[in-house]
Image (cartoon, rainbow, N blue to C red):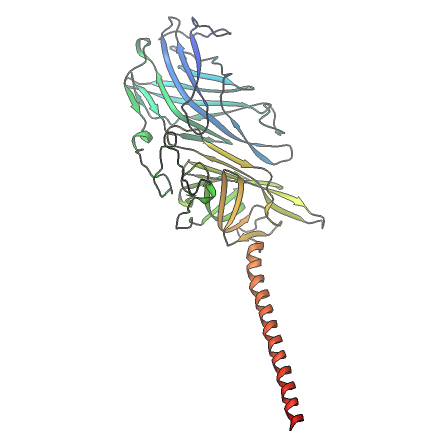
Length: 436
């Protein structure tokens, strides 16, 4: 085993570690792949890796609200600390990027296999991406990697997009090519393909997608008659209605019931969120609350609620922000992100619940619309794990008012016709008596 060594800055070719950056494979977004070739003192490769990654981080602001920040390595990546390891230190793959962010993974092996062991990620909220963050400075999370053992002297490959969630951070990885414990300084020509790639065949059906998913990078989906995403045909079936809740200690602090259907411009069909495969997380506060729904580690939706004071000296809550991430498992495309922090919907009195049984559409961006069905939500002041009295949404109220108004108008019209008829009939009768 080579002894531990480190490279001075700036990088140079004779150095023990080389960090190369290359553009990633084409997709809807052009992104950068990180390529690292870790070498020992003899300039022999001991770890080789090339992959794409991004991070979605939820943080608290000074106003006790919660926002999301997205980070991804770009061309200013460095590699300090990457090492081949020795008898006392495990091999380590480490990178640094942006304004004080870093990520690393170490490796262990047996007589036949190797695997990633522990991932460490540090993000710095002094970065401009964390605008108005309540806590400033570096924050580190550590997680045991879930990578399965890989045969020694083989290259691990996985185009499938995968994610790891810990604390307030979601880590996304795709297009991974990796070999640790490289023998004789030469990267192997033998592959170990991840199970997710083995189980993916084209055409394929993913989650609740009910139609064939095309190869989006080589055969873009276009139609002459309906080029706009808003004209995409919906599945015949409505989404399943899910019941979601959050707890603060042993008390329920948020209740939500709804069916969710996503209209993503980059997807060929609408996506139904399946409550049976959806994980619930988030946070409750006095003036801000977040409900996060994660469906099969493929879709992530954050609903942010806030409290406002009205001119009548009363408090109301409303949906203020929606953030969305879609992980694509086709051709290693970069995750699709969309968000809107300037909403003002689902508005009702604090201490009440908001209800709308009819379909509603939340316009997040031009590329994302969320359709809700049988919605009921209460993000604050939940008592005894039950919804408070509900305030119906205006479309439902209007649906009752319109028939009543139309009925009243028709009734009035009939009454006028009858009055006119009797008046006219009476005049004709009087005229007949005078002639006699």
